[in-house]
Length: 112
Length: 120
Image (tube, rainbow over all chains, first blue to last red; front, side, top):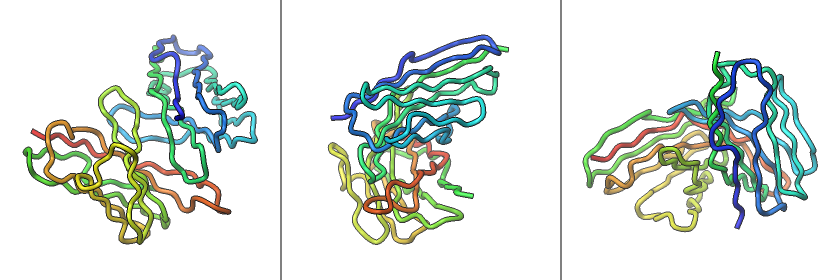
């Protein structure tokens, strides 16, 4: 059974810092991995999607890497801003059916 | 583009009543919709997969008679929580995608804003 773990559970940094969020999964046979952002009481916004054959994806100040063999992904946020404060969720799909298994999330606070 | 809406955004009901939550894809046709629930400070748990015109597929441990899912059109899926109880209080989120499975691969999922259900 696939399990997804995110570390740390919470993170507080001053504005401008570069930071890394970690995600690990127990079964390396994944179809893709996605990073989402969730603001309090809101739905999810997809940030980056990495196919199993890819090593990384970049979007603006965000860079996500995938090491499928070791069951790990990282989300790198450069030059963090207070507007980046949110919960970041990692999710893996083990097939092309679209079913996603989510980690518990990392709640990020960026202080001005 | 690719907007998914949910209605209502929040609902409070008495124990024993039924509540219907709608999930709509506003600008695309969604062959598949997914329903998740999220308890406070916890992650999303997939409840069921809903394909247009067919019965929903429920995840293990989810009572299909309690959580009725209907996907009557390519833009609308509904989740009805029947005989709701306080333990059903949660944040329910749907997602929608255009195509999954087979040669279609796995399309990007677009998430709705969620529905907060509180059962008194």
